[in-house]
Length: 159
Image (tube, rainbow, N blue to C red; front, side, top):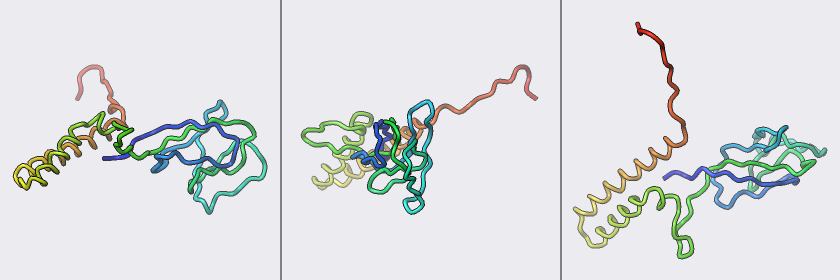
């Protein structure tokens, strides 16, 4: 199963921001203001630190998000990132997979139960159902990231 697509808005005037706890990889980062816009990524060794305060233009990601300068005012930074899927615990009784694709847990558990019971025929059946459910969930997850394909309407007869 793929990672979740998350968004977080953080207000900052500092040069660095702590990464979200479920962070996996960055999709985009921008400043949410009338004069703001997307920030430009630079590799950590390329990021030039500007001693003057102002609106950040560049950023990099190490163990935190670093900007090329300290902000001259409090900026709202919008971070779109791929996050990890929360594990199920006694205090966290649901997550994205259980909510949207409960059959994944059902078929996975049945596969493991029949393996434990040494019923190879039923274990193979539920393993196949589990693999198909994973494929279907990944397909739906990817399809949800894109809108419908554009279409064009032509008046009259088509040659």
